[in-house]
Length: 225
Image 1 (cartoon, rainbow, N blue to C red):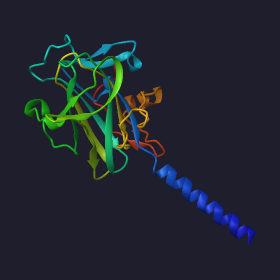
Image 2 (image 1 turned 180 degrees about the vertical axis):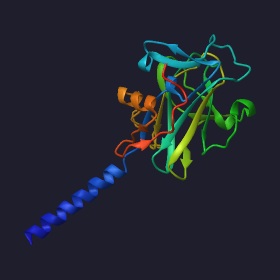
Image 3 (image 1 turned 90 degrees about the vertical axis):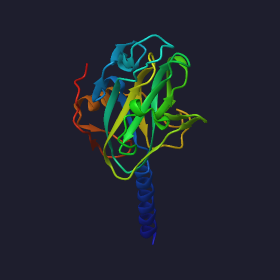
Image 4 (image 1 turned 135 degrees about the vertical axis):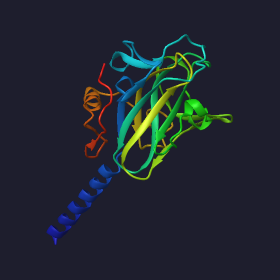
């Protein structure tokens, strides 16, 4: 009888532990300068305060609108499981005239060039600050800003594009999470890429989801600079 009780307790413990592991959030940290595609006039620049000392931006002076809406970075991200996801970006946004990007994430978003259509659904108004800070990617609509979330009906390869909208808005890193309910960076466990994250991103072989098996990336299109 004692053996049966101990065995039952052991089974329940294993099942509970398995559920905790399986329900862990997906977390992927990416360096902006290691994007698969870097399209001019988006460029890589140096800043010792940025993650790994580099970031990307459309070079220019604060408050100078980018009239042609050109340049972008594109990331190939392998989603390890179906579900809803949120994105956080580490940015510097000088003022109200230098604080936005265009963001699309396919296949959840349509195959649309937001820089051409200027669809407000894909406008990201970044939080202001002259120092690096995290901001959850949002819809910047006429009625205000609203946190975005994306839903994928199956695991696999996705394409995230962050396009220039206003000169001088800087992007350092991207954090992908399945914790769509978090409204503060601490709640979302937002973090910078580690050396391990960078090696995985550079190799194009794999990324790791917290509490889950390693998953395959698509091949990189750009060599690390």
